[in-house]
Length: 596
Image (cartoon, rainbow, N blue to C red):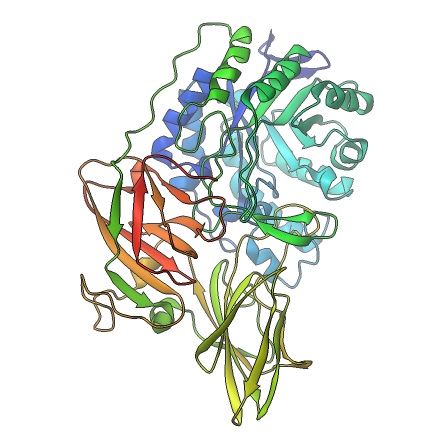
């Protein structure tokens, strides 16, 4: 049995210091899990920690996916085969810089759900249905049943959000009722308001921090003197936002803090040991003020996190600095780190077919919806992608400003088919001098969603636009067509139709977003980094798998990691959806990342 005492942890009567590293199965391809897990062992860790993102596994109510990158059962088996214990954090909410903090978008479309992360009956009904499917899977891997799961989290950093202690109790009871036998725990910041709002009586309290370990543990001990010391998230790096500087942390500084944690007799979980990638549209977003939800800042595609094992699975200086510290606590010599997959040689690739997105609506878009005011993405049943909103301004009149309120998150604006501007949430949200010369002018907004906020009071936001005004007058009579974006989107494009250019002769697709397509010949699959110098903003697919968003014109990330399992010997399809226009549809394959 795994037991907790004020002195620490024990397993089957023997002391066990938990030396854990965060590695999220949903940010790494399954073929790469064994290598990454062995790299944790080589660094000196004995445990792997992972969140479980509800929205990945239940994309629509009652529809579950535990296959491929979502195969949690396979990941837990792989972690045990690698000789690691596991800490599982299957909260309804995970934060993790993940879309909506792991909460499904469709919760926001349920009119009966009045509030998230509290004892709202409709919300809890969805949580319990999800737990019916998830918790027995996790329970089967507990150390009490011959598996490797030591502990399970009830809710994540709840002290950063709310004070509904009955909600935490409800989650704990729901997990116990579905088979969780190992200790339950919470994790929060070390300040008193975090711990008094987020901990639960009778369950282990752990703390999250990046520095000042002695001070953080003293705060925990003042409020929870019977709990052993554990840092559930030692922030040894950090994540990046579009338009901001790339964040790095000095390896020696991070290793010194790790030594301070272990010197206090505490257990630890490195967050992150290996970050991975926010594939497809799964990257979340933050706000610069989590207490008000103001000043939206979306997260980049890479989740390298400046972790000791980088996005490709390579060792770093931080890896060896941590290994030196962890080796002092090892029971036996550490295995040597393994090399990652080979790199493809650097090359350039011309994308020779091009077709305008707006000419593909019948192939890509959902049915048109009419409404007096612009419906949200959630109203339209779309998680992420693009929505084309269309209305009209009566005339003659003008010129007056055309402004958008409640924009989430970016809009290309057209008047009578001509582009007049690109609007951004928190930036320029109006087009000046829009005139109507005849009886009416057609107004179109192609709105793109970025990640939903994953932390603070901004959690649970709607995507799309709330209202559009010409001068002070709201525009009514809208139609909307949703274009979902994700894995498999290029498969729906009729590349061989007469309207799409023949191989080697790209058309001039006109204004608006454009899909570009080319083929990469590969002798043997390997890792690579895809760069788009001179491009603007958009999405990339390799053999139908969405690598994620790029924003070359904004940065800091300017390459996308392409894992070897996505490629095959022979011809490989590369598709780019460029939203802002580019001078020449050529991409580069590079041998090193550019994260800023």
